[in-house]
Image (cartoon, rainbow, N blue to C red; front, side):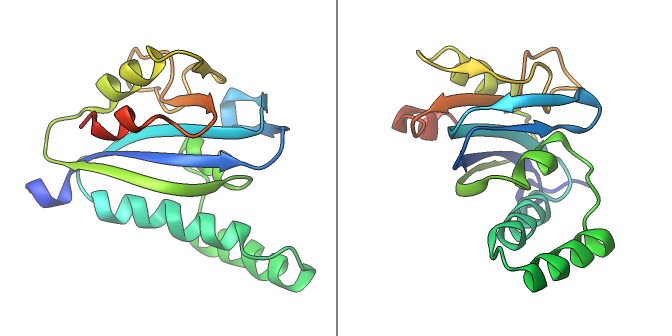
Length: 155
């Protein structure tokens, strides 16, 4: 049984420090511009665990650039973290700067994604990113600069 506290919609504000080409699993290679992105997802059975998974992996991927630490991170990834979602590939190169959540059993991810794309100067970088199970253009929105405050009030 899904409980209200264990389910919900989340948004990750992500900062990519430099423009680069990144392979996103079966979606292939795409050029990502330096700047801020918002990824919107849902977890209908384990919201806190899903967010923790993204954050723990993201911290390890970004903690150090020395060879010894990178080997440790690689071993951890092999054992603990399989690339499962499109966002996993981006988080290898970017930093989560903020997390927003809405707890409950209703899915708001499509509504949030559409609201974000309706804002000026946003764009789709990778069509269907995070949206394989719906008809949305994408669940990853490029803002360039930090997403506006009104996005934080959407839920």
